[in-house]
Image (cartoon, rainbow, N blue to C red; front, side, top):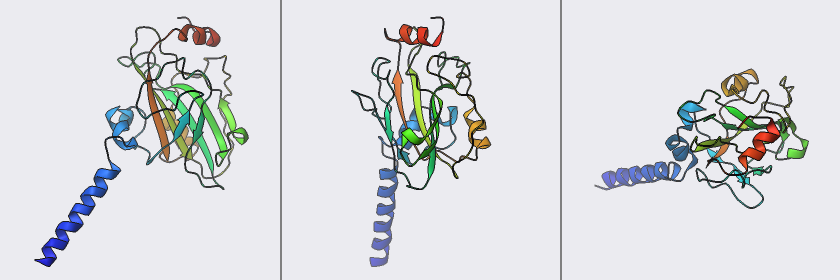
Length: 209
């Protein structure tokens, strides 16, 4: 009887552990619900990256406006002090979720970040905020953090915040394979739809509305 009771208690503990790991507000659960797998990545990160704009903190999977996310955010995650990291932000729903012919539209790409010292990282693609075209509904905006094997040379174009060139159809799978980056270790996600700031950003990027 005691043996059976012990097994039941162990099963209950295991079930509770699984439920905690995959709770309804966990990054794994929300990434699955939002179809980040398989649209962008094959495996969800284990940890949530903290993403803070000037007046708003990204709450995993919630909606923000393009106006709220127009400036470069601050990102933090659990790091090893001697490790280097790469981060990216992509829109898999460009120009619209039902016909994402420009997936993934690259909003931000920074590599060789020592620990969390962004200022010492190498910005390959300067940040631009969400710019979902009018009448295209909700877009997903996904942040991913990758741990590098070491500091390395990235043979990629440098893209300024005034250019849309080389941003569309960013091949994340090929990029991670090319630079031996494994599954993302952290991430975050918000949703956004068109607002009155989008035409201003489109003009900045030289995009026709």
